[in-house]
Amino acid sequence: MIIYILVLLFYSAGSYLAFTRDGSELSLWILAFGVVLDIAMLFFDWTGAKFAPRLGEGDLASKIMRILSYFLFGVGFFLRILPKIAGFKLLIALAVAVWLVFFIRSLTLHIKRRKSK
Image 1 (cartoon, rainbow, N blue to C red):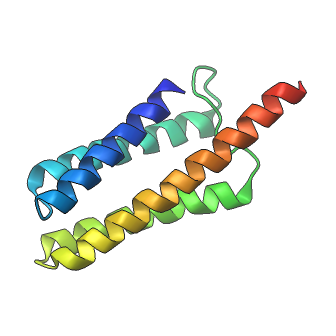
Image 2 (image 1 turned 90 degrees about the horizontal axis):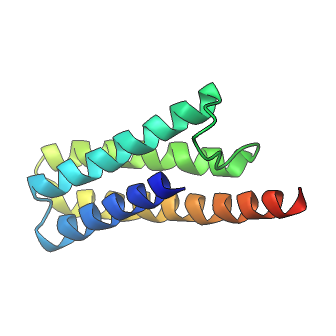
């Protein structure tokens, strides 16, 4: 669970820097590190690693939100390469919001399943 909190911190710090410094390169690096760490956790989840928390397991809506946030991050990064900062900010805000909804939904489902066992 600590790794997901780190991902949340990277997303929060990267989006804050993206908004305050108009998409600076540092914000891209921080956001990209969060995305890579989140994708690594997704692969650990798919391979069945015992040390990785299984968020979004069996919930189709959570999986769709997670993939949608990756897509929004990718399009946002592409818009940042083009000089379209307003679109970049909008897509980063949407991606972080979708990922946050995924995280909260998956965390509540994870806690409910753990209590029922």
